[in-house]
Length: 88
Image (cartoon, rainbow, N blue to C red; front, side):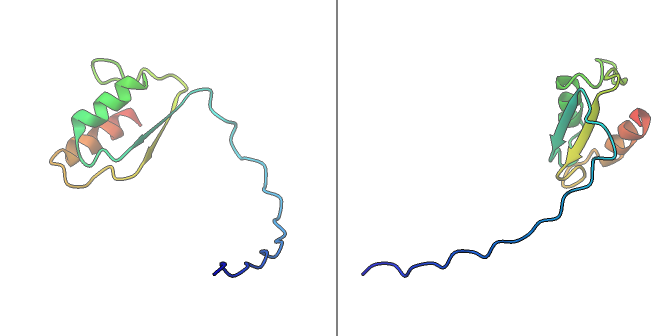
């Protein structure tokens, strides 16, 4: 038996998107799912050159985007919030 033929999807008109409200950053670092682990967060921030060995911001105009679970499961949630507050 041959599979049933599929109908072509109807064409959909899509509106033009507005221009971005901010220019694209020169350097962007995306971090995801550290799950409450301060050591993992610090390692990721150092890897993308956003913080130095002392934990101070060294990223200049770099943007850091956190996606996924920042706080979840781990025991370091207060430390993570304090670090992000200090960097912000």
